[in-house]
Image (tube, rainbow, N blue to C red; front, side, top):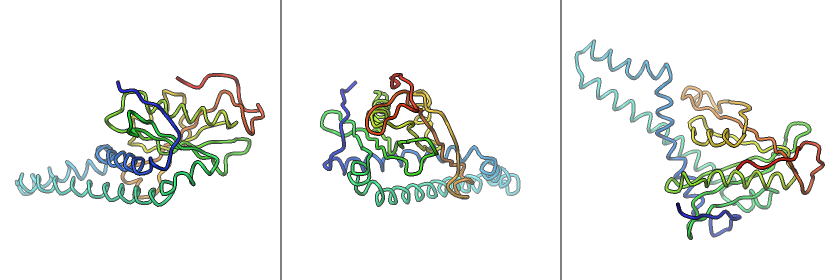
Length: 238
């Protein structure tokens, strides 16, 4: 297992951070397709339609061609959706990470192994939290596929939790996609509780792609803004 350490983001990391984000999003395309194929209307189109083609025409070739074109269309739909989301993100907070995170009362960290950035995560204050809450939101957690299984993602999340606790926040919240099963398992294992679920559009609902919301109540806080109102003493999860 290669050694790694976590440090605050520097401008020299920008290119590698964008690469990590882009590659991580592309890895979700197969999972999104598999999830959509489990939906009732997808089962009607595949294998329902190919079976009908065989029964009506007796042609396995037409059925196979239809299946291939159907899967190709699905891949193109998800690829375009992924590309658009990545492009939008690269023009938003990831365009200037220092401005979006470090200069906005949040922070951004990278995990480094050797001389290579292999993971990242960001945190920003929630602008309009629920009454009586002071919340920090976790963003952009990603680890290189070659460096997973080493505890890097867990260490990055712990870094956000510790940062939020030291700054006097009551909760750390986050959102993740329904196809990001490993991320969901990680958050729940660390004590995050699922608090909601929604679809960003009708098309995403038809695809079965929802956004899951999670929250972690910090056990103890100190630092700027800490009043002791929300917290009980306790450890950050290991």
